[in-house]
Length: 111
Image (tube, rainbow, N blue to C red; front, top):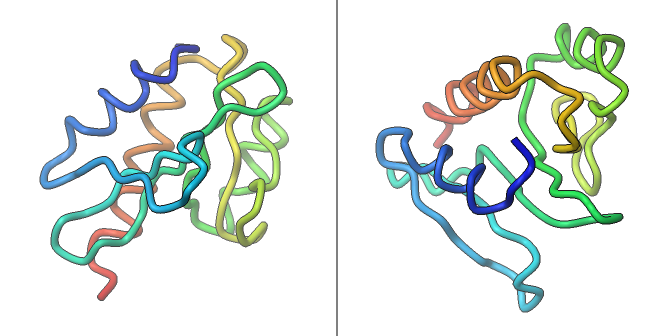
């Protein structure tokens, strides 16, 4: 999974998720919950790749970073709770989907 629209479309399959462009820079797409407007995915292009920032339990941030070189401390977000995943075909799609699901669930009940 390396295409920007592909990852956006996947994130939009989650219940009550919607796409938003909150900045004047249209490079930044966020996927939010309708119930609370919290962001669970930040999608952007950087250094020739599509990146996605995803919220993660602090005890799992290092696990993912140690497992894949393409998972790093989040670009422009809290490094303890967020990871950036560089979509360069080195992280299996199933693991990307698992990280998206975790981010969705971690931000779902936040008010």
